[in-house]
Length: 308
Image (cartoon, rainbow, N blue to C red; front, side):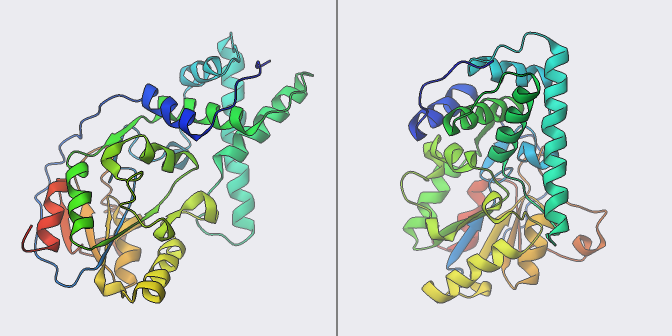
């Protein structure tokens, strides 16, 4: 049974992320960039995994339902739970994955086409059920659950800032552009941003009221619900229209297609082969052409300000 662990405040969780990740380099895609000046852009909305952050898994791990027994055993050990045998670990991870499927099914029954789970809830419910079955009743605090979730996520899907991000974001901010985020995400996603100075998250480069995280909405991209909400806020509070908004993402279906349908300018980030998603098997994606195709983050300012 897990031992009690010390309180894990936000600073501790961010420190945990930094200790677990390591430098990553993007893998070449062989794609030719398409860069042109886009006049009148006033706001830029970014995706996270595969766009701002290199993602070893290509996207957030809960999106792929990936699971790795060895990584789970190491994560459990890190929070004081000694899972000594592989059989136990395999059974637990299978239960974890089944819980994800069950929660998604439940959300679909509520009418949500693209359901998003809350990974914190997944860990809590599986841990509680598991230990009750083992007749080892244990109450798991939020700190314990969040630390375990991060220990696992950073092992199966380490992330690192995309090259050039630390230079580009301050330039966009200095040029007067409003920056926001629309991302499939979990509670640890903003913490991952905070772990890297290059993201500008702790420097206030992003307007937090213009950041949407899928786990809070119970709905993930390619649903356009989050993007519609952010575009509404841009219009109401900043008098910025969709045509004055650029959406940057690595996925034609999740990012480019819904943004195009809502009247936004779009930039497909084709900078890493792990995460580039053309979705050529989707006829609706083949019919859409992004306004820009970026192979390096450093190309973005050139499309937004002639003086950059």
